[in-house]
View: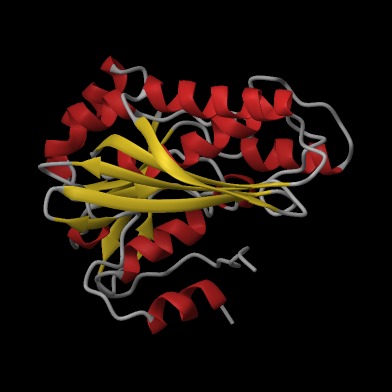
Length: 273
């Protein structure tokens, strides 16, 4: 059973269904970054932990064409965490937020057995990009090169050392690309659970399926925590989307077309819980 989907379906709110809840011109989103669920402390410095925790939260705002304004941060701190550790963690959280003109305005701190971080982002947008905008005939595309995050995670589990600039440590958020391309897009979301799972979620909003125009390997499709963009747009906008991708130095791969009948969905194993 997909317990995440089960839990979400038990909630009764018209605002549920995207990377963030859109209420007026404000967007509200929250993601957790928990030790031994999303990372191990022996893999990352406090700076890397704090920076990635903030980046994966801001990713939801970027993917919906929103500007992150404020952040609320809750920390569970184990007893062995030192004041130097706290300083490094907070410096990374604040610096990363400021990189996106976002301000940490509060939160909570509790004692815990492990280092857990939960962040709420409050964003603003006059034209948010929703999943539900996907239309029959749309082309589906993703930004960046997918697969490296999963590859490096597997290396860490083997005890290997990975590059300090690995995407597993620090995802790249496509802020300028989204700003420039928004008017040509119908729908989108960030890729956090893998291209296969997230494409299925996007299509499920309108009961669509897909027809592949490019084969996708498991190494690419099942790589989670990429935080690249999954987007859909009318085929008439393909050339314009490609030009903007080139202008902003963003790799772009068109891999499928949205169909109503005689289509397929990807095989996807949910990795939550």
